Image (cartoon, rainbow, N blue to C red; front, side, top):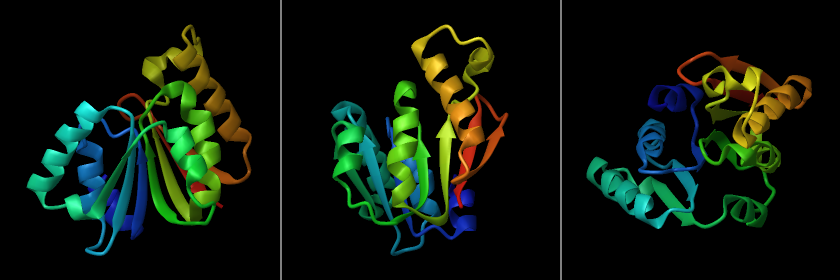
Length: 164
């Protein structure tokens, strides 16, 4: 994540689903000195852990964390093209709507990374709400001309979207 952030030349990033902050730490390290990362999460206890790690790593000044429902927070953000990079690793049923919220906020050629898009192969025969949501998302993205889409079979699946 750090290497990709730096390679893309990302200056602004957003993360949906921060947990204990490891991916945010990697993204923040890849940003330039004046770069910024907005993290959205709902769990104050995990956020406190994340903040400690960011402080120890010396990147906390680049990270703003907002607690609350990510859909509501995204709707409240100005719909201006603001972000170069987005990373989503949150509630799987929310992914399709997160992608919709992110599109107008991504700069041209901005990249969105979606984690867990293979779901251990369960997307091929989805049985749970999470698996059905991701399977539907994968089908939607194949047909969406606004994005260039690549699903990488790394770990549990990582989808990369580039805004056209």
